[in-house]
Image (tube, rainbow, N blue to C red; front, side, top):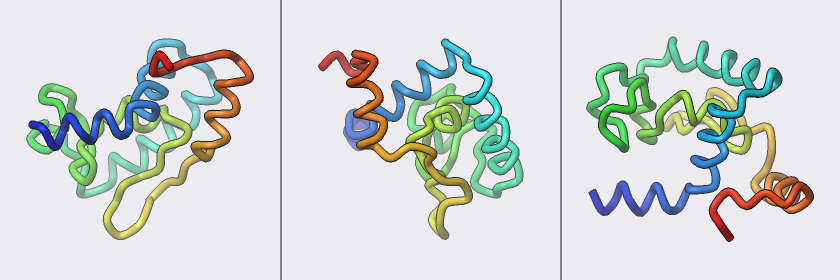
Length: 111
């Protein structure tokens, strides 16, 4: 449980980005998420039962990283965590995302 909490805190900006984009839907993000989900749906690492999810009850998730796919695929600065290499890449780098957030005065983690 502590390992999961550390991972959640470490990636909180990415997670909050995915959560925010799930709530406040934007057409371009939804298009990207749909394309990513299609890739994930074919991946043997998809966990539809939830046994490998970082947080129980959040399936489908990725068994490689434990992320809920509805959030992970909507986080534009996240990439696939497949151990053989990403099956899809980040659209924004973390510093680009931080710059964008600064420009729009958005503080996803309450900083």
